[in-house]
Image (cartoon, rainbow, N blue to C red; front, top):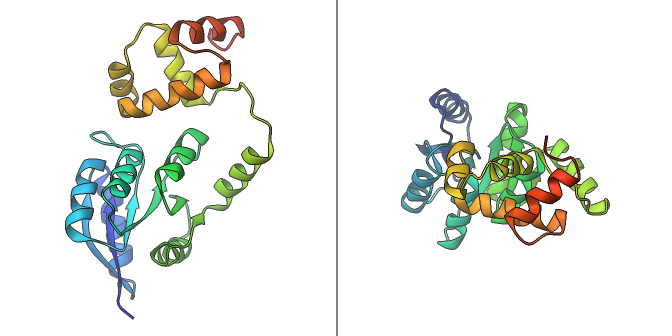
Length: 208
């Protein structure tokens, strides 16, 4: 059986080195390359054609969700397994909607990571237990107007009059992700624009 080929994507060199070392010393895996941000990840995924891309999410210079979306848009055959420290709904939901095959947290035991990569290579979905539990709860609970911590961060900046481009720069996300957060904020607050969102948030004491 041929080795599962990997592309490691993370903005921290120490993390990339650690992951490369783990997989290089384990039979059945081959690391083809590394990328430090989402844009480089897409370029290398197209050139190297790995079986699995291990993708971090929040990276300066192109985040993981953008990269997952672009990999799908280009029709690349690789599976994307998110490996990150972030487990909030504002991270997990966009990544899964963008096309991630799995979502694992960086504190996962190494054997769980190896198993997840093997499963992803076969096209099977893999979720860390904590993420799976929260996604189930989210599906079962009625929608509420409660804003996530990231949505509140975006709304606070909107209340200061910050433009989308500056919000994206300050939070290390793309403008498209900012717009997605705003869409969710509008839906939760039952409004149609920025001014109404801010006014409603103050009325509901969501903003200080």
